[in-house]
Amino acid sequence: MDDVFRALADPTRRSLLDELFREDGQTLTALAVRCDMTRFGVMKHLRLLEAAGLVVTRRRGREKLHFLNAIPIRLVHDRWVSKYAEPWAAALSDIKERLERPMEKVFEIYIKTTPERLWEAITDPDIRSKYQFGAGQTSDWTTGSRYEMGSPSAPGLLGEGENLVVDPPRKLVQTMVALWGEDVKAEGTSRITWEIEPVGDSCRLIVTHDQLREGANEQLYGGWPMILSGLKTWLETGELLTTPGSLLYA
Image (tube, rainbow, N blue to C red; front, top):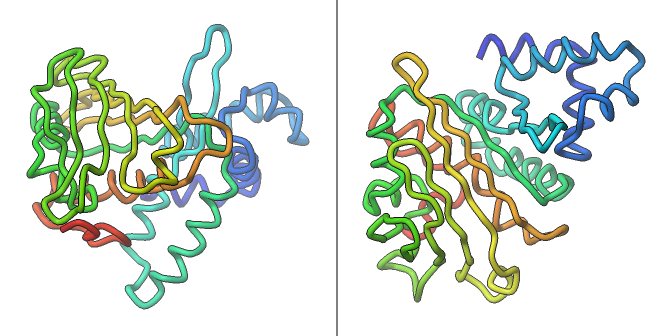
Protein backbone atom coordinates (compact mmCIF):
# COMPACT_ATOMS: atom_id res chain seq x y z
CA MET A 1 0.00 0.00 0.00
CA ASP A 2 2.98 2.34 0.50
CA ASP A 3 3.68 2.12 -3.25
CA VAL A 4 0.05 3.02 -4.00
CA PHE A 5 0.11 6.10 -1.77
CA ARG A 6 3.48 7.23 -3.14
CA ALA A 7 2.19 6.84 -6.69
CA LEU A 8 -0.99 8.81 -5.95
CA ALA A 9 0.92 11.61 -4.19
CA ASP A 10 2.23 13.02 -7.48
CA PRO A 11 -0.21 15.26 -9.43
CA THR A 12 1.20 14.18 -12.80
CA ARG A 13 0.58 10.52 -12.01
CA ARG A 14 -2.93 11.34 -10.82
CA SER A 15 -3.57 13.15 -14.11
CA LEU A 16 -2.37 10.08 -16.04
CA LEU A 17 -4.81 7.93 -14.09
CA ASP A 18 -7.52 10.49 -14.87
CA GLU A 19 -6.72 10.11 -18.57
CA LEU A 20 -7.04 6.31 -18.32
CA PHE A 21 -10.21 6.80 -16.31
CA ARG A 22 -11.56 8.88 -19.19
CA GLU A 23 -10.39 6.47 -21.88
CA ASP A 24 -8.86 3.10 -20.97
CA GLY A 25 -6.29 1.27 -23.08
CA GLN A 26 -4.12 4.18 -24.32
CA THR A 27 -0.60 4.08 -25.77
CA LEU A 28 2.37 6.02 -24.38
CA THR A 29 2.20 8.33 -27.40
CA ALA A 30 -1.47 9.16 -26.79
CA LEU A 31 -0.83 9.88 -23.11
CA ALA A 32 2.28 11.98 -23.80
CA VAL A 33 0.32 14.28 -26.11
CA ARG A 34 -1.93 15.23 -23.19
CA CYS A 35 0.90 15.93 -20.74
CA ASP A 36 3.15 18.98 -20.60
CA MET A 37 6.39 16.97 -20.42
CA THR A 38 8.64 14.81 -22.54
CA ARG A 39 7.70 11.32 -23.66
CA PHE A 40 10.52 9.98 -21.45
CA GLY A 41 9.07 11.77 -18.41
CA VAL A 42 5.63 10.30 -19.02
CA MET A 43 7.18 6.85 -19.42
CA LYS A 44 8.90 7.16 -16.02
CA HIS A 45 5.62 8.07 -14.33
CA LEU A 46 3.82 5.18 -16.01
CA ARG A 47 6.50 2.76 -14.80
CA LEU A 48 5.92 3.92 -11.21
CA LEU A 49 2.16 3.52 -11.61
CA GLU A 50 2.69 0.04 -13.06
CA ALA A 51 5.02 -0.89 -10.17
CA ALA A 52 2.29 0.18 -7.74
CA GLY A 53 -0.26 -1.97 -9.59
CA LEU A 54 -2.40 1.02 -10.58
CA VAL A 55 -1.66 0.53 -14.29
CA VAL A 56 -1.57 -2.74 -16.23
CA THR A 57 -0.10 -3.00 -19.73
CA ARG A 58 -1.03 -5.23 -22.64
CA ARG A 59 0.65 -5.72 -26.03
CA ARG A 60 -1.54 -5.40 -29.13
CA GLY A 61 0.74 -6.03 -32.10
CA ARG A 62 3.43 -3.35 -31.95
CA GLU A 63 1.46 -1.17 -29.55
CA LYS A 64 1.68 -1.26 -25.75
CA LEU A 65 -1.63 -0.27 -24.20
CA HIS A 66 -2.09 1.03 -20.64
CA PHE A 67 -5.14 0.18 -18.54
CA LEU A 68 -6.31 1.61 -15.22
CA ASN A 69 -6.37 -1.12 -12.54
CA ALA A 70 -8.95 -0.35 -9.82
CA ILE A 71 -8.00 -3.24 -7.53
CA PRO A 72 -5.34 -1.47 -5.35
CA ILE A 73 -7.68 1.48 -4.80
CA ARG A 74 -10.46 -0.92 -3.86
CA LEU A 75 -8.16 -2.64 -1.34
CA VAL A 76 -7.37 0.73 0.27
CA HIS A 77 -11.10 1.38 0.43
CA ASP A 78 -11.87 -1.98 2.02
CA ARG A 79 -9.19 -1.45 4.67
CA TRP A 80 -9.99 2.09 5.82
CA VAL A 81 -13.50 3.14 4.77
CA SER A 82 -16.00 2.50 7.55
CA LYS A 83 -19.24 0.62 7.06
CA TYR A 84 -21.10 3.91 7.59
CA ALA A 85 -19.34 5.50 4.62
CA GLU A 86 -19.78 2.38 2.44
CA PRO A 87 -23.00 3.47 0.66
CA TRP A 88 -21.41 6.84 -0.23
CA ALA A 89 -18.17 5.23 -1.43
CA ALA A 90 -20.09 2.59 -3.39
CA ALA A 91 -22.05 5.36 -5.11
CA LEU A 92 -18.80 7.06 -6.20
CA SER A 93 -17.47 3.72 -7.44
CA ASP A 94 -20.66 3.35 -9.45
CA ILE A 95 -20.10 6.77 -11.06
CA LYS A 96 -16.53 5.73 -11.93
CA GLU A 97 -17.69 2.54 -13.61
CA ARG A 98 -20.31 4.44 -15.60
CA LEU A 99 -17.73 6.87 -16.93
CA GLU A 100 -15.10 4.31 -17.86
CA ARG A 101 -15.00 3.16 -21.44
CA PRO A 102 -16.13 -0.47 -21.49
CA MET A 103 -14.69 -2.68 -24.18
CA GLU A 104 -11.78 -4.42 -22.52
CA LYS A 105 -11.31 -4.41 -18.75
CA VAL A 106 -8.05 -5.57 -17.16
CA PHE A 107 -7.66 -6.24 -13.42
CA GLU A 108 -4.47 -7.22 -11.59
CA ILE A 109 -4.00 -8.41 -8.01
CA TYR A 110 -1.29 -10.16 -5.99
CA ILE A 111 -2.37 -12.95 -3.63
CA LYS A 112 -0.20 -14.80 -1.12
CA THR A 113 -1.02 -18.37 -2.14
CA THR A 114 0.14 -21.11 -4.52
CA PRO A 115 -0.96 -21.39 -8.17
CA GLU A 116 -2.65 -24.72 -7.36
CA ARG A 117 -4.64 -23.26 -4.49
CA LEU A 118 -5.63 -20.23 -6.57
CA TRP A 119 -6.74 -22.47 -9.44
CA GLU A 120 -8.84 -24.49 -7.00
CA ALA A 121 -10.48 -21.33 -5.69
CA ILE A 122 -11.42 -20.31 -9.24
CA THR A 123 -12.81 -23.68 -10.34
CA ASP A 124 -14.32 -25.17 -7.17
CA PRO A 125 -18.01 -24.11 -7.03
CA ASP A 126 -18.22 -24.10 -3.22
CA ILE A 127 -15.12 -21.92 -2.83
CA ARG A 128 -16.15 -19.64 -5.70
CA SER A 129 -19.50 -18.95 -4.06
CA LYS A 130 -17.66 -17.54 -1.03
CA TYR A 131 -16.41 -14.50 -2.97
CA GLN A 132 -18.62 -14.21 -6.08
CA PHE A 133 -21.99 -13.05 -4.74
CA GLY A 134 -22.82 -16.53 -3.44
CA ALA A 135 -22.69 -18.06 -6.94
CA GLY A 136 -20.48 -20.97 -8.03
CA GLN A 137 -19.47 -22.46 -11.38
CA THR A 138 -19.83 -26.14 -12.23
CA SER A 139 -17.98 -27.83 -15.09
CA ASP A 140 -15.68 -30.76 -15.86
CA TRP A 141 -13.02 -28.11 -16.65
CA THR A 142 -11.80 -29.48 -19.95
CA THR A 143 -11.13 -27.45 -23.09
CA GLY A 144 -14.33 -27.07 -25.10
CA SER A 145 -16.58 -28.06 -22.20
CA ARG A 146 -19.57 -26.13 -20.93
CA TYR A 147 -19.89 -24.47 -17.54
CA GLU A 148 -22.90 -23.16 -15.63
CA MET A 149 -23.01 -20.47 -12.96
CA GLY A 150 -25.73 -20.63 -10.35
CA SER A 151 -26.82 -20.76 -6.76
CA PRO A 152 -29.46 -22.82 -4.91
CA SER A 153 -31.11 -19.56 -3.82
CA ALA A 154 -31.31 -18.15 -7.38
CA PRO A 155 -34.49 -18.69 -9.43
CA GLY A 156 -32.49 -20.08 -12.37
CA LEU A 157 -29.08 -20.14 -14.02
CA LEU A 158 -27.07 -16.94 -13.49
CA GLY A 159 -24.69 -17.51 -16.37
CA GLU A 160 -23.22 -20.03 -18.79
CA GLY A 161 -20.47 -20.39 -21.33
CA GLU A 162 -17.68 -22.46 -22.85
CA ASN A 163 -14.20 -23.18 -21.52
CA LEU A 164 -11.99 -22.14 -24.46
CA VAL A 165 -8.62 -22.76 -22.78
CA VAL A 166 -8.09 -24.87 -19.65
CA ASP A 167 -4.41 -24.93 -18.64
CA PRO A 168 -4.15 -25.56 -14.88
CA PRO A 169 -2.81 -23.89 -12.87
CA ARG A 170 -1.83 -21.15 -15.32
CA LYS A 171 -4.63 -20.01 -17.59
CA LEU A 172 -8.40 -20.25 -17.99
CA VAL A 173 -10.26 -18.62 -20.89
CA GLN A 174 -14.05 -18.69 -20.95
CA THR A 175 -16.92 -17.22 -22.90
CA MET A 176 -19.67 -15.81 -20.72
CA VAL A 177 -23.38 -15.19 -21.23
CA ALA A 178 -25.04 -13.48 -18.26
CA LEU A 179 -28.51 -14.83 -17.47
CA TRP A 180 -29.52 -13.13 -14.21
CA GLY A 181 -31.71 -10.59 -16.02
CA GLU A 182 -33.12 -9.86 -19.45
CA ASP A 183 -31.05 -6.67 -19.69
CA VAL A 184 -27.73 -8.48 -19.32
CA LYS A 185 -28.86 -11.50 -21.32
CA ALA A 186 -29.43 -9.17 -24.27
CA GLU A 187 -25.73 -8.22 -24.20
CA GLY A 188 -24.77 -11.60 -25.65
CA THR A 189 -21.38 -13.28 -25.26
CA SER A 190 -18.21 -11.77 -23.79
CA ARG A 191 -14.90 -13.38 -22.82
CA ILE A 192 -13.06 -13.72 -19.50
CA THR A 193 -9.38 -14.70 -19.19
CA TRP A 194 -7.72 -15.69 -15.91
CA GLU A 195 -3.88 -15.70 -15.94
CA ILE A 196 -1.87 -16.96 -12.94
CA GLU A 197 1.85 -16.26 -12.56
CA PRO A 198 3.85 -17.40 -9.49
CA VAL A 199 5.91 -14.63 -7.89
CA GLY A 200 7.95 -15.82 -4.90
CA ASP A 201 5.54 -17.13 -2.30
CA SER A 202 2.62 -15.35 -3.99
CA CYS A 203 0.72 -15.25 -7.28
CA ARG A 204 0.05 -12.47 -9.74
CA LEU A 205 -3.50 -12.82 -11.04
CA ILE A 206 -4.66 -10.90 -14.11
CA VAL A 207 -8.31 -11.05 -15.14
CA THR A 208 -9.19 -9.65 -18.56
CA HIS A 209 -12.85 -9.20 -19.47
CA ASP A 210 -13.12 -8.33 -23.14
CA GLN A 211 -15.25 -8.70 -26.27
CA LEU A 212 -17.73 -6.33 -24.60
CA ARG A 213 -19.69 -4.08 -26.89
CA GLU A 214 -19.19 -0.31 -26.62
CA GLY A 215 -21.62 0.88 -23.95
CA ALA A 216 -22.20 -2.61 -22.54
CA ASN A 217 -24.26 -2.99 -19.37
CA GLU A 218 -21.96 -2.26 -16.41
CA GLN A 219 -23.37 -5.23 -14.48
CA LEU A 220 -21.18 -7.46 -16.67
CA TYR A 221 -17.86 -6.05 -15.46
CA GLY A 222 -18.53 -3.73 -12.52
CA GLY A 223 -18.26 -6.43 -9.86
CA TRP A 224 -14.69 -7.56 -10.59
CA PRO A 225 -12.96 -5.36 -7.96
CA MET A 226 -15.27 -6.78 -5.26
CA ILE A 227 -14.90 -10.36 -6.53
CA LEU A 228 -11.10 -10.26 -6.67
CA SER A 229 -10.81 -8.47 -3.33
CA GLY A 230 -13.00 -11.18 -1.81
CA LEU A 231 -10.88 -13.90 -3.45
CA LYS A 232 -7.68 -12.40 -2.01
CA THR A 233 -9.21 -12.01 1.46
CA TRP A 234 -10.50 -15.57 1.58
CA LEU A 235 -7.27 -17.19 0.35
CA GLU A 236 -5.04 -15.16 2.67
CA THR A 237 -7.21 -15.08 5.82
CA GLY A 238 -10.00 -17.64 5.41
CA GLU A 239 -12.52 -14.87 6.10
CA LEU A 240 -15.38 -13.60 3.92
CA LEU A 241 -15.30 -10.04 2.64
CA THR A 242 -18.81 -8.59 2.81
CA THR A 243 -18.79 -6.06 -0.01
CA PRO A 244 -21.94 -4.59 -1.60
CA GLY A 245 -23.82 -7.43 -3.24
CA SER A 246 -21.39 -10.11 -1.99
CA LEU A 247 -24.19 -12.00 -0.23
CA LEU A 248 -26.73 -11.53 -3.00
CA TYR A 249 -27.19 -15.26 -3.58
CA ALA A 250 -25.67 -16.53 -0.31
